[in-house]
Length: 114
Image (cartoon, rainbow, N blue to C red):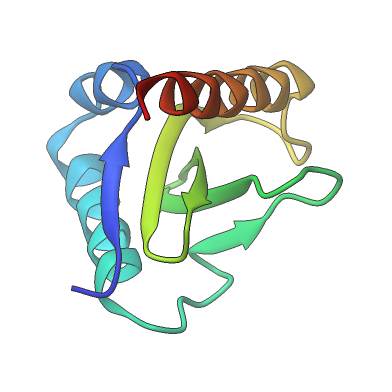
């Protein structure tokens, strides 16, 4: 394994649990790719422009498009944040704002724990 993937809070788990089996398989495929492939294609993992270190994991299942926000903690640890079904071309600003808040909270909690 090249990278370790962790969930922050239960945001991703709640999202994942509500998906059908086909979508879960696609999500699992992409997460496995991120964990085990050195150079992940941008088709599956892309830096979110205008953010500091936020990435979106891109999953397509049938005609549905899903996004999972994440960031790297160090080089090999990927932290999954919120996820949603994408309904339009543009990523909803409120989802980006939520992911940025969660990232800040993660590092705040981490600094208190060290």
